[in-house]
Image 1 (tube, rainbow, N blue to C red):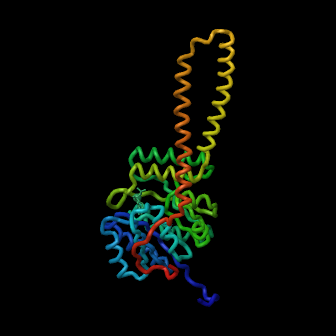
Image 2 (cartoon, helix red, strand yellow; image 1 turned 90 degrees about the vertical axis):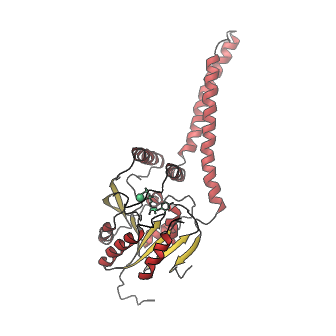
Image 3 (cartoon, rainbow, N blue to C red; image 1 turned 60 degrees about the vertical axis):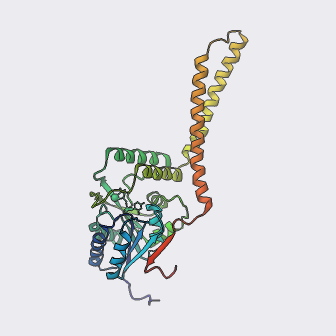
Length: 319
Ligand code: UDP
Ligand code: MG
């Protein structure tokens, strides 16, 4: 225990999830280290190798030889970026924790600004916000736009422009760690916590090398996690649609009985087919919606760990 009257320098942790970044990771870590050293604070780099099939772990090990402040975890397989982030946040010890991507799209040169804002504003979270989304395919831009609009409407939280590049103080990290869910949506969960947040704009640069590891399917899955985790509106929609159909069916029912009694119940074949089709597809979509939530609940009740660590460098004493 240090005596409490000497003012300690804050310890800054930088958490970096890594997947297939073998060629880039060393340069990136060097750049981050430079920024942190200049800031004068104590620092640690927490690198989480998310089961990269390439030489990423070898590069991290080599880097650790020259830097005692580097700590690393190697997950046993690819658990996905969100799980890798969980692993990193759980072991990070800093008074402030910066989370960033290893591919150079989150510029290390922004780190001093994040630290400055943290110290000046006294905010719990300093969020780097994308002012431009960088070079992306039109489909992924459109997808992101649609997703954020939808999520915003459904959940009532403002997620637009949110990125995974942010600084959280100890209070925010501890609060975040209290969320035990398996369906992790980092961006959403930090917004949900509702701490005092300040924003720092930045431009997303091009990837320094390699390709984004996020396929369209992976993005869609994350979008589904985001929506199901932050809104139960789709479930209410099922009920709403059922209600509307009940009203329509009463009206149609009365009409049918009336025509029957009046002895005029002959035509109406098209109506039957259409109703059959509409109700059939609505039922199936409804089942699907319920299934999505059921799947999430199933994943949660299994209570499996969010990730499995295979190897580590300078692991936390607590583990
Ligand atoms: N990443 C990860 N696990 C994955 C996919 C990505 O840890 O399964 C890491 C990757 O190494 C990078 C960050 O997450 O540091 C962002 O990934 P990427 O650049 O591929 O995503 P994008 O910028 O296209 O959203
Ligand atoms: Mg990227």
